[in-house]
Image (cartoon, rainbow, N blue to C red; front, side, top):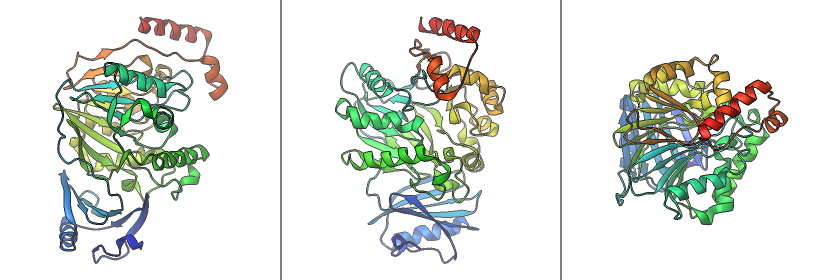
Length: 422
């Protein structure tokens, strides 16, 4: 057992599963436990000098975070009968209550139209807080060539031409279509934007299953670690399941991380996604990132109707992600697809989850068709669709991916684009 647990009181149960989470954090998983075991562990922590930082209970899931020389996060899930204990050397803390802020504008959510000219995936969401600062979720693919610039220009425009303040930037997982342009913003445009805190929880770059993920994933993960280490002025919060945090007037619940999937296989790297629920102005917005089959078991099995929300982001862009049951439980009036129109219609006959989510909803929006603006609280009929800004480079797509379309289909797509462009 790693020495980080040396001065931490542990249950008398034997043979826990141990997992290196990354960034010096370790997890112990105890099977066949009860809530009483959880309460005993919490009491033992307090008797040994750990001070309670945060506690959050949710539908038979109990979570407590303690502080001493390291963070101790203890949580128990009744549906699984598992007790998890995480020792994390991170010294950074999240806000456990709404922050003080100047109330100057309305809370608004945007599904940003990333440049899909050469790639069908990538996603970026932006929320303007009531003080005019922003919370950003993911970014765009490395093949969305100029989106680091477009993201900053969009935020600057929303901020009346002044340098934007990003109070929090949440990264769901380390795939290139989610973090590449965030890294470009940090490396090439840091003086054009103020980023206060980055929220994430990525597995170790050399995780047990990393050879299944490919060299591109490894390179992106190592680049991320390097960039974070080179920017110590940016606060980093390593999120764990059940942590309940606030950014300005926004409230978040961490629902699932890679620590909940282990010891099951991570052959599908999308199962390393961190899923969060955002609560703002009385509305709930669910962001599962690219959560797939293993993450889905956690989310559906633990939370049930807590997943009910007003707006849901379609997991894994509407490719094979979370289950139809996940979207039945979400029961969202508004569904956001971070995908191209071409791939949306290709996937629709194949993906029951997409059809279920659409059938339940009152509206759905495809990211390639223009940036979507949603005032919060969410009210059906108030969504604004902005003009379409980018169009597919069919020759470039063919050279990169081998996708070919008929001339008639390409012409139809172009005419539809011109209509959206206005």
